[in-house]
Length: 322
Image 1: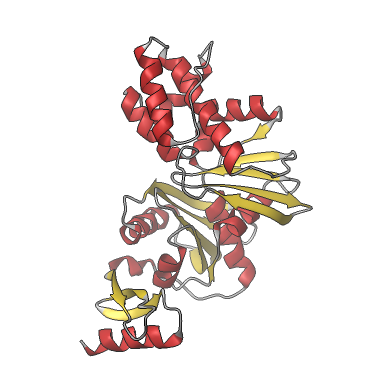
Image 2: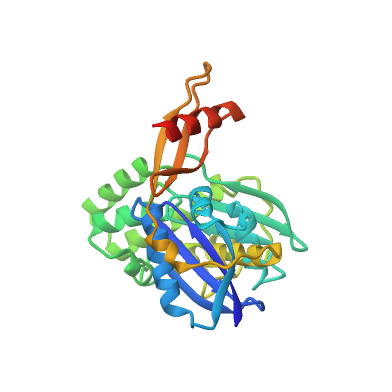
């Protein structure tokens, strides 16, 4: 029997999962849309992963990361629940041990990670603006009537990229409409959008950071060669994009689970268990904490959002006694 280590990266837009062996070799991988329901997304991910791994592979440890890592980590009884910065850094270092800078642009967030000799020394994430993320490109692709997957090939054909104001989505959309109305070619507008994403990213997420090569670009947007080209032109550096650039967060989570050396046999039958969440207010003090309760077959499993132990205990007792 081969030991497998499952890593799950649950984002607001997409959910990624891999299974690796003890030598970090990929045994299974999947990527699908979260569609606003992380519990359903992780069940679909598990079904896909189970169909790929062979019967002699037994998952013995699980790591979760991403914005829904706590929720999914609780449901899967994960051995490791880790933030995106650490997971992406670990996943990237497993392939590019000399990396100094990681650019990551996902569906609704983006981050930059600075490393020195394999140690994370600085990082930043976007806060409010979505102009430098994949959701911005997706919304503009619908406006232009072109699949976002084709944006890269359009951008590479551009001869004179249109200058698009990329400091926020509202200004960018307004500028795009204006440039289309006065006759700019679609490929030039799309190349301009790719440059706007990069400019926004470097001026906000990358502001004040010391960017040094080797630079690795990852996340779903790294699959867009138009954005890769814009990064290379603006930074004047070679940008490395791995074939699994969209999976590096989940690979990092799987490696962290393996390194934990905490093992427990995992059953994919967990897909048949009914999980749900509900929000409750504590009400025991003026903080009035809003606590998220995770229910397993209508029974309280875990909760968070409390500022003190009394809050969680109070809500738990309420749920159990109903």
